[in-house]
Image (cartoon, rainbow, N blue to C red):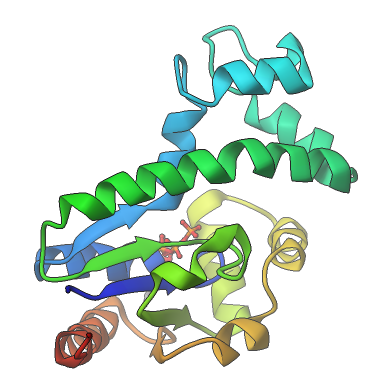
Length: 200
Ligand code: ATP
């Protein structure tokens, strides 16, 4: 059996850079964020259940879920957040399962941006890789990339898994505090470690 690797890290930690490199090296990358977007795009599989649960106002003109509206709506409402997750998570899991079946590549990389403990991923994963950088570096990179203020980035970080909690879950940490070329080198090393995994 080929390994299934969970790749996680906070916003702007470098997950995309790492997973792109792993794809170049022959891994099969499955991005849960991308799947969530597809499910909530116009005609997406989640749309009927979203309308039934949250009303037509959760859908925008083009037929996609109104992300800004839903983010606002569940922000202070844990019950509705659970309902939203209850719709999305099973559909995401089904799609991930289908993509895992395809079994292309040397190993599969499941990119999971948020809580790796949440959403029932743990039993699927043979190895957890965490991309980690200093909080200050992370804040600066997201400010640069998204044009956010420091306060906006800090507000997002507060909604994410605590850095230490995430690190404590890691089988392997890819540290991303220096250049992109060093990140590539570290990813190549992690790739080698993953290939050494022996699974029953
Ligand atoms: P998100 O969860 O928000 O999608 P991510 O974890 O996928 O983020 P990336 O998109 O890979 O993170 O990186 C975030 C930003 O920081 C990007 O603009 C990327 O080009 C930049 N970046 C990542 N690593 C480095 C680095 N070592 N040096 C300079 N810039 C970097």
